[in-house]
Length: 171
Ligand code: HEC
Image (cartoon, rainbow, N blue to C red):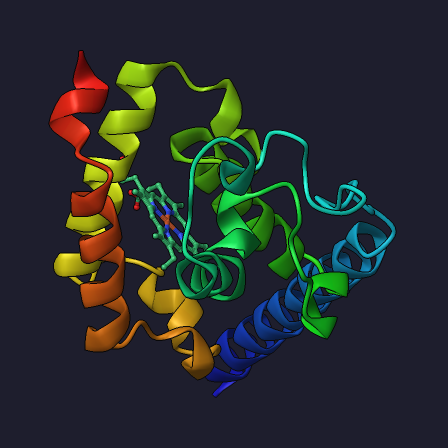
């Protein structure tokens, strides 16, 4: 009888200890979550359309350019339109990682600075990702349904790219 009592006493104190440890961890996480809200990375919002925007270096049909602005510029330009939840960390870091990575691969705001080879390659890639339905990112269109690219838009972009006669551009 004595022994059993001891065992149960022991296990109770152990579970009390564990509970208080869990409580400390939860409070620590909550504290960290509050603290990171004060981290405000700079926004990717340049003033107006860039001097080096793609529309300043080649003829882009208005509809095609508008489609890029509406459906691609959040990650591929110097002008991101931030949703309200961009104010919440760590969501913001996650969004920023897409913007930074997206801009590295293709930045419509800097297109004029691309040399012929890079520009041609990027146009090829644009045609490719649209044909494959790879862009915009799924995690983006999941929320931004309006950013889904329609088959008509893909056709228009392709017609435009073909009209640029990329083979000629390559030389
Ligand atoms: C939510 C952010 C986001 C949006 C919106 C978005 N992209 Fe991207 N894009 C990325 C990221 C991140 C990468 C680089 C990683 C990858 O390829 O998945 C990328 C890569 C690319 C590449 C390079 C692919 C390669 O093989 O290197 C092209 C071209 C591209 N995107 C075109 C577009 C076009 C066109 C649109 C609009 C119809 C668009 N993207 C919309 C985030 C985005």
